[in-house]
Image 1 (cartoon, protein in one colour):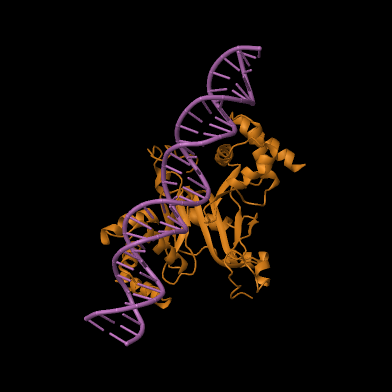
Image 2 (image 1 turned 45 degrees about the vertical axis):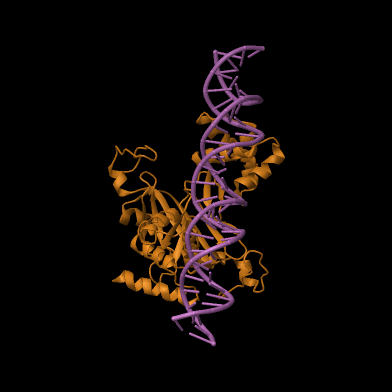
Length: 164
Length: 164
DNA sequence: TACTAAACGATAATCATTATCGTTTTCATG
DNA sequence: CATGAAAACGATAATGATTATCGTTTAGTA
C-alpha cells in the first residue's frame, strides 16, 4: 500500500540525516499518514498517537513535528486560530498546497493543484525575489454551506449571506 | 494630507457602527497609519502608541486591534513566528494584499497589486467555493540578501544558497 | 450638569509552545 | 551479546502572547 511506501520513504529521509528512528517518531508519522486530510494540531496528533504509543509525551510530539517540518516532510501552517497545524507534503512536492477555509462551518479543504506557477514567475521577475515556498489560503463559503441557508452553526451562528 | 483623510474615513466607519471614538482608539489608528509598511505586532503598536497616549494599557491595544479587524480596517496576519501582525487595508481594498517574507533577513514587504484575479475565478468555478478573502505569502530570499553572499545574519547565520 | 453604557487600565488567567532535567533508549563498537 | 555515549524521551516547569475579569473612568446624550 501507498502508506507503507511513504513511511519507508520518510524513514529513509530521517536516516539519511542521521536522525534516529524511534517508535515514537514512527507512530507520529503513521498518524499523519492516516489522517492526511485533517490538518491536525499538535494536540490532535498527541491524542491520536497515544492509541499507538500510550506512553508518549506531548513534548515529544512537538519535537517530532518540528523535526518533520525542518525536513520538509510536513508544513506547519496557521489559519489564524491560535494553533499551528501540521500538513504532510505530497510525495515529492516542493511547495505547500493551497487551502480553502470555510468561514461558516470551519472546514478546511485542500487544493493540490499548483495554481501559482505564472504568478510566481511574475513575482520573481518584478520583485527580484527568489521564491522558496508559498502559502495560499482562501477564506469564504464552502459549497455545502452555500446550500444550507438555515445553517445552525456552533461557531458563529452566521447565516449565509450574499452568495448564489 | 492623505493620512488625515484616511483617519476621517476610519472615524466615520467607527461612528457608523456606533462605536465610540476614544483618544486611545484615535492614537492607535494614528500609529497604524504612520507605520503602514511595518507589519506591527500588538506589542509594537503598544510601544509606539504610548508616545501619544502614555496611559494606554496593552489590553486596550489588543481590544482596539481586534475591533479594527472586525471592521475590516486592518487584517490580522500571521507569518509563523508566534505573533499576530496587524496590517492596514488599503483604502477601499476588499482583500488582503500579498506578502514577501525573506527567510534570511526576516524583512516583510508587500505586493499591493492583486495577482489572484484569474486564480480566484478558477477556484470559485472548479471548487464551488465563494471566496471572501485570501492570504498569499511567499517565502524566499529578498533581492538584498541575494546579493549579500557573506550575510552575517543574527537569525540563522545561514548563507545564501543556490540562487543566482 | 448628570446619567448610563461603553470603554478603560491593571492584572490575573489561559493556553499553546518551548525549555529543562533526570532517565531511557538507540546504535555503533568491542 | 555487552557497553558506553549521544540522542531521544517523559514529565513538568517556564515562557510569552492573548484573553478575561473587575472595579473605575469617560464619551455622548438628555
